[in-house]
Length: 117
Image 1 (cartoon, helix red, strand yellow):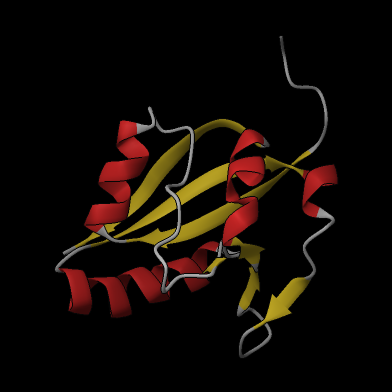
Image 2 (image 1 turned 180 degrees about the horizontal axis):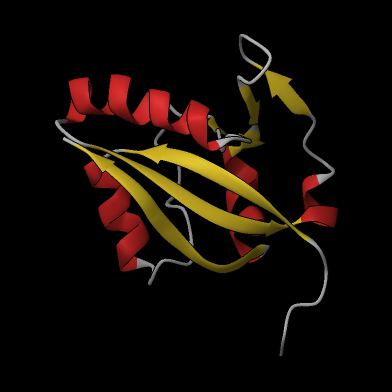
């Protein structure tokens, strides 16, 4: 079945451990959150994802990756856009308990678009 509904492009800065779990899902799903991670935070622009992957993930994990994926736009309407800083620091806050449903609305594979070490 082909997906014909509009999609929204999201990005996620990702460390090596999380990326291994995404790879294990055949690039189709984000892993469950850890107890200290009550929210899943995809971001709305690549530049913000690059800043986190390069600045935070590399420092804490030795590597950082920027991933890109498409999600059904209609489904995303339930998550208000959150501004976490400047005008382009935009993210969605997906409660951990809704991540399975969020994953079910990903269209196509999760792709790695940048890597930093």
